[in-house]
Length: 77
Image 1 (tube, rainbow, N blue to C red):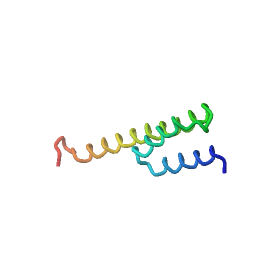
Image 2 (cartoon, helix red, strand yellow):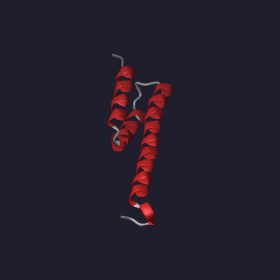
Image 3 (cartoon, one colour):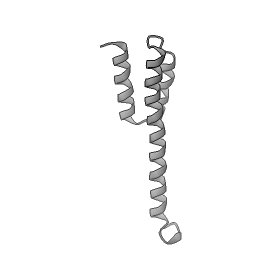
């Protein structure tokens, strides 16, 4: 397995884990990885950034739905 394949697998596993702190740690690690080309590094970091952004949006939607459920009739139950 090439280094790039290993990095792709690690990125996929980290995204599947869906833990923001782990995604951020891998982002930093990739920025210092000189075995990857600039383009490959950017591509893998972008996958992580997109997953982080999606996770944030998903969290916001869940919180809004929860608030809506809790505030039926205009007051918090």
